[in-house]
Image (tube, rainbow, N blue to C red):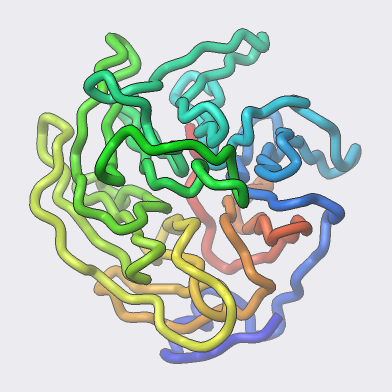
Length: 294
């Protein structure tokens, strides 16, 4: 691991000589890592392997679900239930601690969703997710025709299962995260290689968005996974590794790691970042902790 230092403030976030630790390998294409802050484990998807895995410090890897419906992004709600975006079925599902499984969203206005991709939960319990087309091809899903003419961002009310379309003008909506005060929602666009930001209104809808930052540079990687740390730095995958921005959208630099689809904060102090990098799960330590999911 090495750093592409664009601003000296990057060294407030991570040590110059931080070491990338390999935890497990041999997967097909891993995504959607989430850390359970109380049970101390990491769950993640293997999209192409059609499985959900779990990693613990002492026990290592175990299979959480043998048929994940080619799940991609995952998160937890305020009750600690696991929410998953399923590529093969175009659904958003919820799994409780006792293993009970429910379907939360499948269609919008009578038409099947494209392939829900990444997902976050607001503190009021409302669920926001992106819906690009990547799971409707052989590479990361099941090849089938599209029913919707757009790739949207949605808000799902889990109480009444109502689904509201928030934005429909993305070329490839992917990773998303809230600002620390939840007054803004960041959504990146894989195809256009930038991050947009939207005002979150009182009713949960979004104001008009604008381009907040671009992920520029050399090397493999695209805008995909995206998270904040407790200082408000935004991390986004992109060319060459993890791009780190300050709250004013200035890129502090790039943490050069193998091509990474997504990542999650974890460990007891939340200063570890777990990276899902194609076939390999890594861990990298930081100076500033990240945010827990619930």
